[in-house]
Length: 145
Image (cartoon, helix red, strand yellow):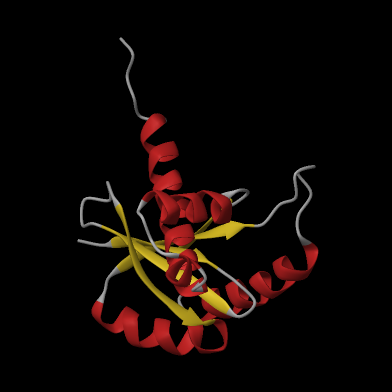
């Protein structure tokens, strides 16, 4: 069965998450240096069947896109689509995911030293993005009758 990959793209580090086979739950996968992201994905996609990627869409509070990072994301997505044209690309508003991820780290009891590690924060953010996508997708199919 195929899975869905979540991506919290960052200038320096990119967080990754993945669904279970039934596409119900999102799990943190890894954080990789953004400069190595395509190499990581090339190796990873040999072993995992991914049908779709969900990439965070950075927006400001006024609903406008964050232009600088979005330009980098668009370059990545173009390169990814050329290499993997059969994998569907979805975008999801990622406002507040970093704040939610940081709050989650506190609730989990992670010490300050661990909370400073961007790798954990990015991985949790990617998981939140992917789980939010799964939840929104699920709501479309709820029957209230």
